[in-house]
Image 1 (cartoon, one colour):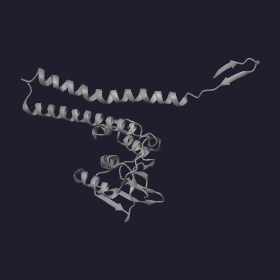
Image 2 (cartoon, one colour):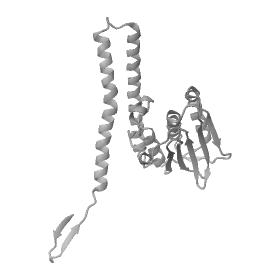
Image 3 (cartoon, one colour):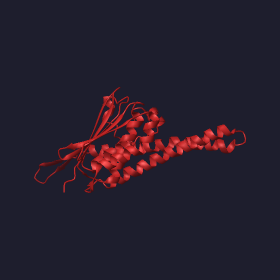
Image 4 (cartoon, one colour):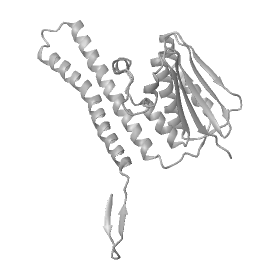
Amino acid sequence: MRISELADGTSLIRFVDRSEARAAEQMRVDFVANASHELRTPLATLIGYTETLREQSDEIDPATRERFLSVVHDEARRMQRVVEDLISLSRIEAEKFTTPTDAVALEPLIDQALKGERRAAEERGTALVRDIASNLPRIAGDAGQIAQLLDNLLSNALRYGEPGTPVTVSAHAEGPMVHLSVRDQGDGIAPEHVARVTERFYRVDTSRSRSLGGTGLGLSIVKHIVERHRGRLKIESEPGRGTSVHVLLPAAFS
């Protein structure tokens, strides 16, 4: 609040709401801290194992050396995934004011994403169920980003769904929108976490997410893609019964 005395003796009072600016600054600080942590942890592991391999190379048996190299490889790949996801977020945010207008066929992109996850599904004994309405309208979108959205939703569903239970991908027209959903039958998410799972690096169970290979950025990328497409995102989850992610995207009309 600022108060200025005017010439006629009255006062001019100016109120400035800085809550959004403070929230944005806090998000920036949290993001830098979380990103640093996500990269520092695997980097410390890499340094530790490589120093051991270098300094004690004559004392390490072949089996142990192979195990150490496997850890180094896995941690390097984890860092690579984090960096790639950060780059994706940066690109999406840079384009957020440009609404995609290409008429994109969603069904082939769904089929492509299902094909890409088939091997992972077979390893977990998971059936990939496809439920796509006939005559599904095209969406106004960016094909590359929609493919990325589908990949993230499917990989999340497979990662956190219970092995042996199905993952269902559905798509149908809903008024001027196309309703896409991906459902798993896993542990689900407690209500207090649902509103925050699209935050960068937010994890419901940190140790489990890391052990399963998650970067903590997948749903944040999904959220930003949906926002760029002027769509809507809704996450429904029930502990012990699974999670459904609903995405509504504008249909393309000629």
